[in-house]
Image 1 (cartoon, rainbow, N blue to C red):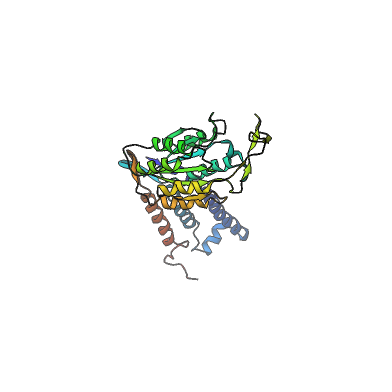
Image 2: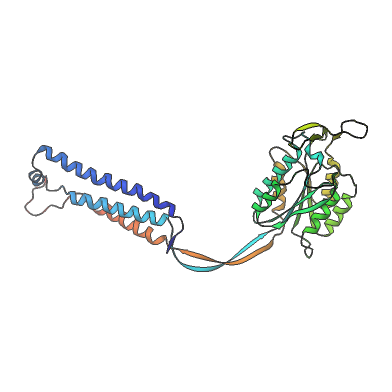
Amino acid sequence: MRFAEPIHFYLLIGVALLAVFAFWAIARKKKILTLFGELPLIMKNAPYISFARQRTKVMLVVVGLVFVCLALARLQFGTHLELLKREGIDIIVALDLSNSMLAQDVKPSRMERAKQEFRSIIERLQGDRIGLVAFAGDAFVQCPLTLDYAAAQMLLSVMDQNTLTRQGTSLSAAIEAATGAFEKNEKKHKVLLLLTDGEDQEGDAVELAREARRQGVKIYTIGVGSPNGEPIPVLDRRGNQVDFKKDDKGEVIVSKLDELTLQKIALETGGKYYHASAGELELDRIFSEVSKLEKKELESALVTRYDDRYQWPLLLALMFIVLEFFVSERKKPTDGEVHA
């Protein structure tokens, strides 16, 4: 025997206080009557008053409330086996860690906004597996597909622009690494979310997207940044800005969001391009579409379930409370007593 929600036993404290107050009130009434004379004499002149019946009614209510608390605590005993299935799709998020993601045209920076988008993606998952690919000039799988969302967030927290040694932005490397992280024997249930400012420096991302489509991958691209561009800050070891990144001629480099490339990649696989917004409405739209995709069984297991028996104390509670309703506070008149 066990209780599924024992926290409701704290309600018994309130029931006990109610019982103490009720019995105190009855004792108080008896004490007040003694102010008018001897209690036996008063009771003889008021034969219908019964303090014993009043205490009985209180006890019936208190016992009924105790059984209500037992029902709320969900009394359980007996078990049965249940097959638990978990269904969903595989989602890999490719996160751009290139220096251009340090630009601050979105606050606090493109990279921090992209990380927040990843956290929000995890909050929207409903049994789906999640994976994480880090990329800049090259790419690698930071977190393989998993149902352990806490582990994925922990791996995200240690990622920054220094995670990869080769800088630049290779969308093709990101797509290739993500495609390889999916199960190769499946041609569906695969979604890639590409979080980047889209400045592809290799130019063959669309061709890799075409190959990903043949592997059953649908790509949604999320552009982080502004098409107007923003200088790329140079940070010291403490993360403080010391300058802006400059080209060989000494001119400040302005990084711009390349929406056209991201649109081409998404359309090539039947996905869509969205611009990252503060309200994250793009994620709502993406998951609205993703929820319509066919799901697969990710895991199944036999689990032991306890049988709820809260109905029994609830029935007893109802019986005691109904019985209290039919118990009168007054004695029944006996022969020889005069009706008032």
